[in-house]
Image (cartoon, rainbow, N blue to C red; front, side, top):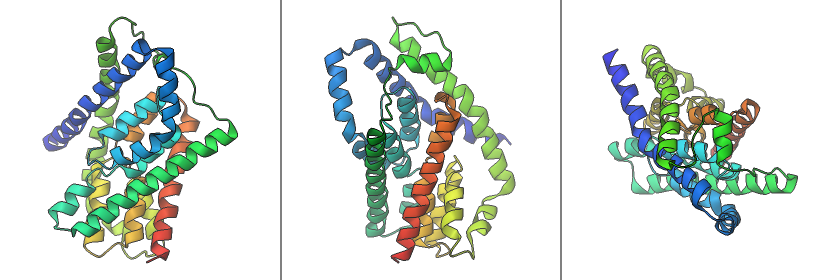
Length: 280
């Protein structure tokens, strides 16, 4: 039990710098930028999915948490959020390196995740523009949705309040997830995916939705052991957005919209994983 608590504290502590810097940047955007600069940022935002795909590939789920906060604050688009989620690698890269996976395989996996994330993000933004779905607003809307009373004078204090609020939400959930996975065991995740070549892609996608590093560890290990196909592995790793989904549920007070994002993420991961499976 002490080990579970310690792991939950470490997992949450690793996110604090990302969250604080993200909210600090958002406060600066809200209170410091001029109208002209804001217009330039919005126009440049169409390339957001490309940057999101690249940043998400960094082996740290803090970027997915930051992207969720930025999306809730109307700073980045749906496509950018989706790109970060799809390219997030979590514990995949450390596992590949520790197991001595060939460099070609590592770059192929990372490249596919970045490419699929960027392409899906650009497509999502294109559809949103075509249908006239606007994400206009300001960072201040995030404060209104969260019901906080952040002042406009001290951006450091406001960023800290947001960070502590998210931390208070994440810590008990992370603790509960760690305890549940420890009780169920990674063997249960392994047995769920074994011996199901067709359903493996769909089941790997469901395992990938678990907001815990155990999911990416199990999926990557099964593939390296020859027990999971490449398409199944990619489906699970594409869907796996780390703790980003938990942060999204906390900061974006639109349950139906959040559910739609989860379904879009799962569908994209499973479809792309299935296509890779068909292509061999």
